[in-house]
Amino acid sequence: MNPKSDAERIFRTAVDRVNPAPMIEMALRLDPASETLNVAGSDVSYDLRRFDRVFATGMGKASARMALGLERVLGDRLSGGLVAVKEGHVEPLERIRLVESGHPVPDSRSIAAAAAILGLGPSLGVVLTERDLVIVLVSGGGSSILCAPAPGLSLDDKIATTKLLLSCGATINEVNCVRKHLSAVKGGRLVAALAPAAVLTLVLSDVVGDDLDAIASGPTVPDPTSFADALDIVRRYGIESKLPATVSDRLRAGAAGGPDAPAETPKPGDPSFAAARTELVGTNRLALVAAEAEAKRLGYHSLVLSSRLTGEARELALTFLGIGKDIAASGFPLERPACVIAGGETTVTLRGGGRGGRNQEMALAFLSALGRSPKDGESLTFLSAGTDGNDGPTDAAGAVVDADLYRSALGRGLDPEAALAGNDSYGFFESAGGLVRTGPTNTNVCDVQVLLVR
Image 1 (cartoon, rainbow, N blue to C red):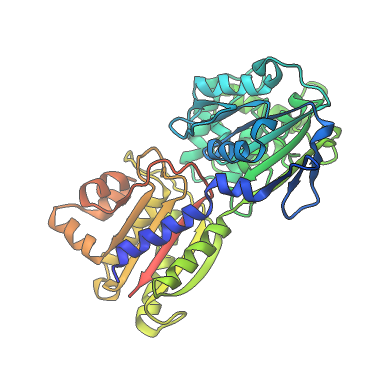
Image 2 (image 1 turned 45 degrees about the vertical axis):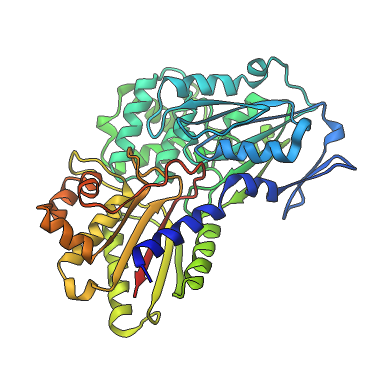
């Protein structure tokens, strides 16, 4: 066994399982005889003879590869489309046009992409009617990739707010709750823009718990959150006074209500959703199950711990270290060689000015703590990486660490504790080694952690 190599193999197997193109091909079935499009595992079906045209649109890191799968399913039955993706996350497509924009912070291209998709008919040179079917491909990252500031707000307002939310430790659900109440496209508002066409949304989840209204800020589903919820979030994290005045004024006005208050996002039961259906096609749990199977094939006793990990990355690292020490000392809860697998989406509260992401931070925190008890950690290897191939604003998916890396780093004069204090996990691993680089995977179902005990 080569634990580092095994950990990366297990992680890459997880990523391969949630390749969006084959997942779309598994989720959709076109019966050429009856021209019926069926969604697997549900009662949703469409008689395509009722529609003159089928268009595609969407947004997110994985949406290009989702579009590739859709083209394979529908062939020349697809009339065209427009999908927004993160820069570099592209695929060669024949019928669907891709536009690239900014992530994790929106940019001017995000504004242009949102305008084009909100005006999908004119963008495609058509007028949408009730005899059109629009298939919306949604994946994580769509909140930044598609940015339409609500009236009175600017792109700079949205950028400043996004940066504050990402740096204060807010969860992705909390970030998206605020975003939805600052947007003209999120929180179900896209469905109204596509009317009177029928809308089928296919979702690849990057949100813990797979809440449809939180994935890419739920552009085509009812929004159960309110302005009051959004205001509570910014107050709870102590950032209300740091927000642009236009943003804080909008949140307060919306929470107060009244005839002049900004309109709430559409809620469950709103008539705009009468011709809209949404189906989940890929999740973190599917990736973890595939990882477990690969770990067993490699000879490890394996356990999927959870697909719902949340909280501070550096704190959860200590949990994994504790589990590893238990296994090493007593074979609890698994006999050696052991593999513990988990997934979810953690957060990082920025304290320093370094570079990195939540996965590299978790790996660095594990390594730092491992160095304080070296004898207990000789048999442990830990990997944390994002299934999208991008961990924070870096070119790495995450990192893999063990006791050998700790000793090597010290020998080079590197200090893991100092790097952790400055949130400089990327700088540390770039010098010490251990970065996991996959390039853009064009999928996105949160993160994967792999703990090996040999």
